[in-house]
Image (cartoon, rainbow, N blue to C red):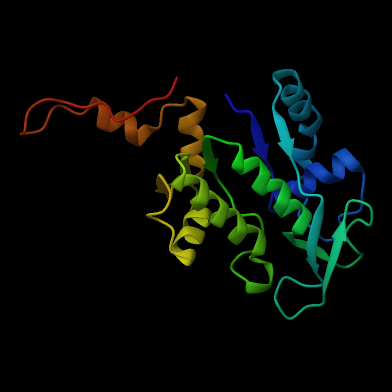
Length: 203
């Protein structure tokens, strides 16, 4: 159903550690999620889906803007005592190229800790690119509380095709699951205005 998947933010470090075996120091790591990374990559390969992962990073010695900031990449790994907070310039270029060739884009999750100015570049550049391709006809859907917050921060709610606060719910709907709230509305009797409507279910 998709041609490319960009994986960024904290989730990316689990993939990077498993696939490249590099030290990610204090960056986010999902031990349970790490177990299924090889399976995800195999499925992607079998279906011809390109997985785009960051290749360079902006790191900090603490979760805040007052820590020491360093750049890192796949060769160096994350320095000891540091954590990945944003993607670097090479990663931003890869993401932009992927977005540029896409006709339909579902964005769920920021590229870094965009709430802090020192680590907003990846998310801001992705937002700018998505707004740009929306103008040229791409269908762009923003789903997820944090991503919707980024839309509000950058004033782009009306510059994309659709902006939803439903993160996990958006993905479940795309997966084909029946959402209880939507099902309840679909099953409700017709209102006083007469007639009925189907909300949406993707199969």
